[in-house]
Image (cartoon, rainbow, N blue to C red; front, side):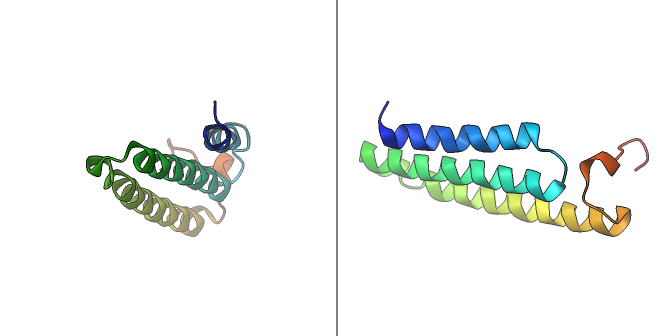
Length: 98
């Protein structure tokens, strides 16, 4: 495993572990998701450059567009949750009361 591959894999794993183990605030969960998407974007960009194929050149931009949509939807949910519940703690959210 090359050092570049190891760094992208470890960044993704750290984001996944942060998402799994530190779920107290919705904002921290969104930041972990964004870290995972950033590591995927950089890894896909490096892979597209190393493959030297023109067909893979648009894949990082497509992933970046989906990441931006995911971030905007997450922030909209964060604002709506903060307005209705008064906090962004994930323990205060109950799907049965919505």
